[in-house]
Image (cartoon, rainbow, N blue to C red; front, side, top):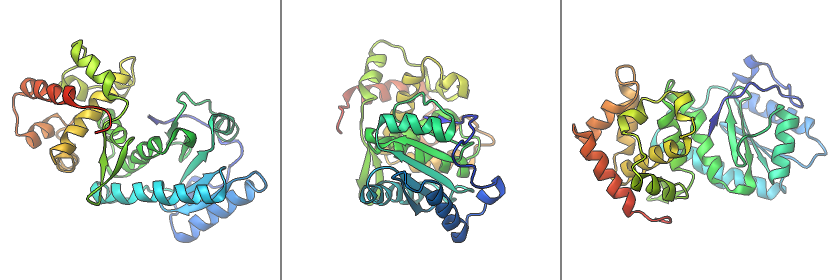
Length: 284
């Protein structure tokens, strides 16, 4: 989940905002060296993996593997599919080895008490803060958010979270990032059967507050599996491009979706999409 929290770094008041905006190789090396110095003797490994700096408290070879196989892989695949710009500032990815480390260090380093057991992106702290014991899926999800921030200012929550959550369960298909069905599917199918879904027009028009309301689980799932449908029809990258290009006149993306689908009757499309979702199974 994208989270922009008003946090204060306790351990790491390292760089000024202006310095963070310097994304030269020298700035990355300086930032990494300062983190290494601050964390000396505490069992952390610091790795520059542009556009991020990865910090983890697992054994060094494990942090290196995660940096290469998850962070670098996700960045390369997401840029190939969608994003032309890197984040404008140096961002940190904190990979904490278990739930205790995650909660203890989130409090110590960022004065935060996480609302999720998995991880989150703190835009104000320029950090992705992860309980990596829960797996790399949430990390890939959260990597989407700073790239959206850099490339698609004003993107609505439904698409930011829909695209991010698509890649919670992902892999490589023909050299491209590909989202698979995941744990959000059964709840969505149940909501469809119980006729509890909003129309896409209503979902697209939700404000951030509305999206993250008490319907947030259904909203996430509906947004994710719309992105999944578009992916399966080879329309997702086209939709991103169309929506991005026309965001000023189509701020919700609804008209862009109609154009990409070549559909005017969206009630009919929703019935078709719901039937598609009901045929899916976790693991596809």
